[in-house]
Amino acid sequence: MKTEREKMLAGELYNAQDPELVAGRERARALALRLGELAYDHPRRRGLLEALFGAGGDTVFVTPPFFCDYGTQIELGENVYFNFNCVLLDVCTIRIGAHTLVGPAVQIYTPLHPFDAALRRRQEYGKPVTIGSDVWIGGGAIILPGVRIGDRTVIGAGSVVTRDLPADVFAAGNPCRVVRPLA
Image: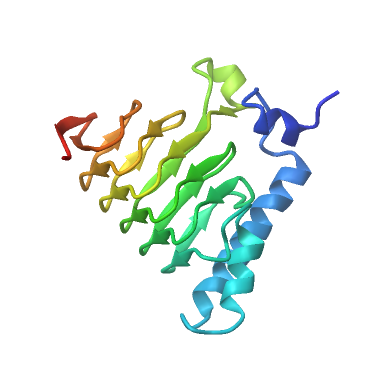
């Protein structure tokens, strides 16, 4: 039988109050809090980032405060930058390609909740998010579960990304849609 964590990572219904999952969230919050307490050039900062993220913590740049559910499902390419106040809810994998810039107050969500109220009281599920390389996500944008964003795409500030976006476009709005190609 699968553990609640295994169900979560597979995108199946799971119980978020499982003790292992609660402990994982507490670990991530403690690491993020410690990160916010250290000066940007403090020698222990890099170790905290490596401990927090599933992959890529050795070259990521984070301006606190930063919030995530687990951190371990966040996989980063080299030189990813998170500005102030970003929120990444990583119940499923969040993959972000190299040299991507994430503006202030950007929110990336992978959790989903059943429409049935009785089921929603007990369980949730998720879908992974994939963001390509050299992407720029403007401040206050929200990326919803299951979305894929192509390489070199620019997302306008305040956009709500509800569906996949191709590479090499400028997209904006609520819902976010392609405004024009970048070329």
